[in-house]
Image (tube, rainbow, N blue to C red; front, side, top):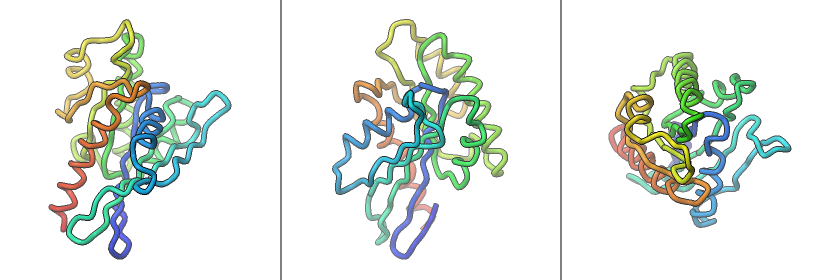
Length: 192
């Protein structure tokens, strides 16, 4: 949480394996949120549209108890090569969205990335159970996907609220943002 005068900003990080749909989530949110309620989507990507360092989308969320609340949405690169970038982006995190790829062949990548997230949080004295989070099961429209109960059992050990998503089609990103926003709003009210 970053406070400045009558404004508070919460950092929400979208984390998941490479090509799971983290950047697509932020692009869908940019399209969904009225221009006056969001900043510009900043993306640092490679020629092949892969995120190199991070994506960033600021969102004006609400005014709660006289303070304007903003959400700073980040997504991290999923490729193993950018492990240090993922760790750096987690510094000061207030909330998480884990974007799991539902495809059967991405099952191990989801598990590995969740382990990576846990290790990176530990470097900041945090744990998966201490940071508010939402689990998003993305790519639910594709053939060859794992059943939700298998993914829930393997990935959602902390009982985070979960959303089934087709980020490319636009279903799921808004619902996911609403869930993590509600968690941030409750946290803001409790801390003030």
